[in-house]
Amino acid sequence: MVNYNNDEELNAIFHALADSTRREMIHMLSQKESTVSELAVPFDMSLAAVSKHIKVLERANLVERSVKGRVHSCRLNAGSLEKITAWLNMYERFWSKRFDVLEEELLKAKKKEH
Amino acid sequence: MVNYNNDEELNAIFHALADSTRREMIHMLSQKESTVSELAVPFDMSLAAVSKHIKVLERANLVERSVKGRVHSCRLNAGSLEKITAWLNMYERFWSKRFDVLEEELLKAKKKEH
DNA sequence: ATTATAGTTAACCATATAGTTAAATATATA
DNA sequence: TATATATTTAACTATATGGTTAACTATAAT
Image (cartoon, rainbow over all chains, first blue to last red):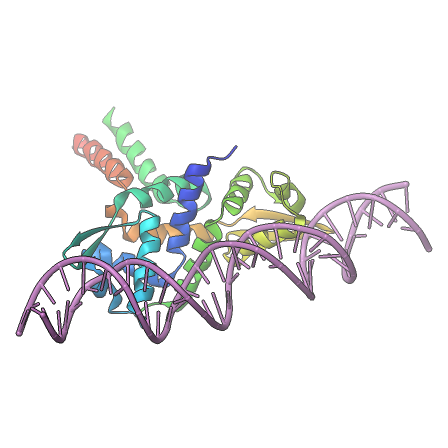
């Protein structure tokens, strides 16, 4: 009835996003790849806490890490957000008019072609 | 620095979505408006638990309720999912090619017009 | 008036979450 | 080698979450 793999994945992703700190981290990473300490700067919390937040983002596959010496560099991962977009698209007609508008335009343009 | 109103709102929405039961409820509601007991059918849990889940969805403004006699009818609310789509759109280039594809098509079509 | 139905609320429990501080690990620098 | 830096891990705490059962409220049906 339900796909529990995909289900658990979505749980992890949505849960990771349900926190302002982690969303802010994602925002930072959308600007530039950053180290753990760089990610920590805007937040009034211990590095240990920051470390945990990053782990939550990693578990959700929203963030990837590459270690070079003692420095851990984090970057956004495309894949995971795609999954939630896919989920959202199922309920598109309930909230978004953006596609409709685009598709309408496209249709009009196509019509003119012929 | 951060908009805490919108922030709390996003927290509530993402949190509401981070649970398979609640996502399944949203799916059901995308098919048809349903009562609390109808929503409860597929789930192996008490009505009290179902009631709580619905409340979480309501707090996130994902679901609205209208009471008629003793029956509570629930329906999807467009607004909230729009907010998360808006958030996602900020990071669009990191995950979604859908708009690109659509827009490319549109451009091609427009070009042919002239 | 009694009973059945639809749903909520309260009290409780186990586990998860988000934070802390302190100690540990690993690497770079003096 | 000794020390400083980058980060994780462990142990702990307070609160939130997701579930339970039992009692309650409100409405409908007999």
